[in-house]
Image 1 (spheres, rainbow, N blue to C red):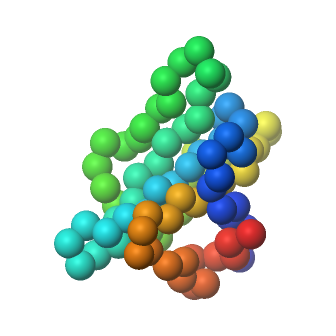
Image 2: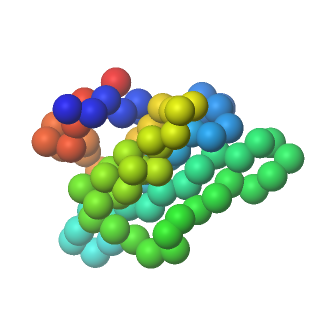
Length: 89
């Protein structure tokens, strides 16, 4: 089971991934962004919303480099973490 970290402003270092989960109609959707150096804009990919499981799997796949960073979760208002997605620290 993967461990993810609750997003707090200023906590993620450059290279970290943030998955934002939010309501879209009656579904929970997500997108991934990669934190950039302060002089650059963060990278958001892909440009479409995904279901939470797909977003988590995609973030894990993008985070397989030797210099792995933490994956942070940003929960929008009203979105609750599902323990089936992994552990949220």
